[in-house]
Structure formats: structure tokens, C-alpha cells
Length: 98
Image (cartoon, rainbow, N blue to C red):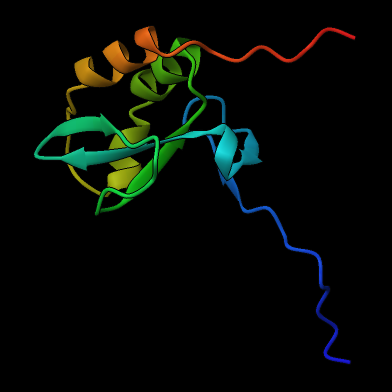
């Protein structure tokens, strides 16, 4: 046996805002295009991606901490208006109450 498991592992990423690890599918991928932070919900845009929870709170934390500068390895500031508009239009899924 090679020691590998046959179960598929769910890839995890770290949110730039709250710094919590979550499944890649639970986070929103953001790509830098010509100084703008552009949402990439399908994960197909070329370039280096950064991940945040799709909530305004995590986006605000990431902007305040200047996390996009480090994630993209580039100087800022980055324009986040398109990203904010996307988050306002997209409803956030709430977990069911138990």
C-alpha cells in the first residue's frame, strides 16, 4: 500500500479577512486585474487568486489589514468597488438553525 487514502480531500483556503480556514467552495475567489479586485465566483479567471468569505465583514477586515497587497504581492491600493457591489447583490447563505 502506498499510504494514500482513497477519500478525496476537500481543499482548504484561508480567508484574508478573518484568517479562518474554510473549504475552497465556501470562500469567494478574488483576482487582481489592472488594480481592481474582481470577484471570480467560478474560479476560472487567470492570475493569482485571494479568498475571502462572501460577507462585507470579512472584506472590510481584509481591506483594513491591507491583506490584498500581500496576497497579490503588489503595491496597492486596490479598487474594491466592483467587489462590494457583487457582495451586495449576492445573498449570503445562512446555516440552518438546529
